Image (cartoon, rainbow over all chains, first blue to last red; front, side, top):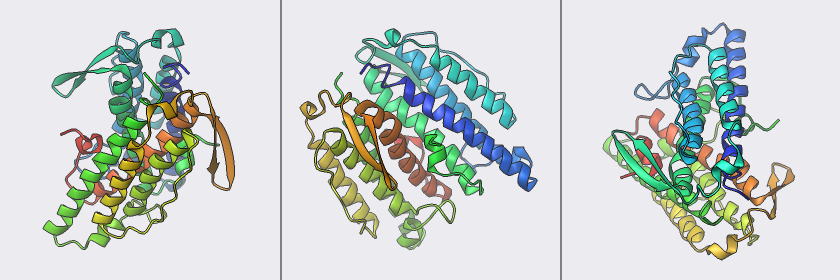
Amino acid sequence: MSFYDATVPAFLQILGSLGGTLSKAEAHCKARNIAPEVLLGARLFPDMLPFSKQVQIVSDFAAKSCARLTHSEVPSTPDTEKTFEELRARLANTTDYVKSFKPAQFEGKDVADVTFPVGPNTMTLKGQQFLNNFAFPNFYFHAATAHGILRHNGVEIGKRDFLGVK
Amino acid sequence: MSFYDATVPAFLQILGSLGGTLSKAEAHCKARNIAPEVLLGARLFPDMLPFSKQVQIVSDFAAKSCARLTHSEVPSTPDTEKTFEELRARLANTTDYVKSFKPAQFEGKDVADVTFPVGPNTMTLKGQQFLNNFAFPNFYFHAATAHGILRHNGVEIGKRDFLGVK
């Protein structure tokens, strides 16, 4: 299969499933009279990032990784979302952006250099290594951490929600 | 790059980093006089799996996914580990097993059917889809959940530990 097949569907799966998880979290708040900002600001530990930021980072790793891999302009999205609805819109916009890439844009990009920021530095890897050793682990890390925050707060979701399996 | 390059290095990265995380968790227990079984049995929510089981599942997704993708005999490992040392040994054994695969075994396997159990049923996907839509999301989910359990319990680790960056 193509490098596009190794990349885009993986991002789309979790962007979609996380949107569904957000809806369950929002319904949980409504059913229990929990102010949405409580769950949106929840963390697994005080020096970890809150739920809403985890979702924003998931969105960024999907969008920016596709851009970097295809040597496209890297999009910059301000993290302004303050509600479940706004976070769902962020994920939906990211989904549209990721879907806008064409398989041809990924051709040969598995062996092309990708230079990307890591903290204050930059690093250069081949596309395949960037995807597997940086983009995917970061993307899934923040998606699973978002899931874990909700689970820890009693939202009734499971791994099927994470995987987006009906 | 080859389908081997899309698969094996990703598993090895997290198997290695999780071994390092286990050592930090063990040191945390010693420094604070915490019985290791407390952390090994910690969960983010009562109906979630404990830390030790998360590690065992990470190990299994790496080993079994490589086996299924290459149409090799699927290894079965009893989940008997009760200490940090035993879990590190489990990860080390899995690392050796994953390293034993040769690139040639993965040739053409991205487009070959993989049939695998999902709960009481089986599912068949092309190798690339199995990897991206099932093996990777599950593998990273349990690795990140293991990380989250330790973070929630105050173990001083960060995303660099998850990624295995020195």
